[in-house]
Length: 238
Image (cartoon, rainbow, N blue to C red; front, side, top):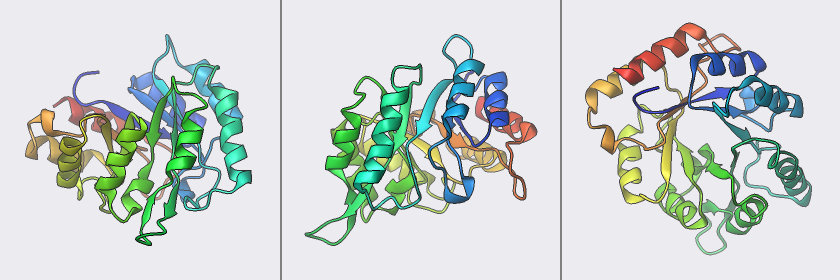
């Protein structure tokens, strides 16, 4: 597909089939939308691997056992490492992860470097994406720079705002400041605002380089909507 790339957040197998049928660039596999996405069931990953054709869309597996991103216990680390070991040789293209900790010096929230390094070392050949926890850090830009140093390929962010539409200018500034990784714009994006962004910022060279991320789930629904996905993809081609 032409235009900025698009990643569909999939919370069920229907979304996986929809994303495969419409030829999106990537699928993020996760569960529990009410908790902003947790680790998916093994069956969902297996289904996605069977459903795609010739290695596309690319598959990213969420590694998030629960919604507490600031507490990394031995039990939680085991769940994450077990998932990486299970799927790293089965055809998935990468993993989405994120842990933070309170700095002893500043008392601010920052990247949990040691945890991130130990997890990434399990599958250094895979794509690694840091999820929207980055927007809750005390200094998101410094966090993104740290992730660039750690070797993350992408960072999902709304620009520190409630939605990526509202944080778009931050996203462009942060992308320019961190050329060694790709920002993935996500958070509350719908086809209408995306069309507005396409019109307002025609220079795609200034955009977050990894494109856009959305679930295409309308308000009041639990499933991705095909018409909304079609409208969004059409907007990205304009």
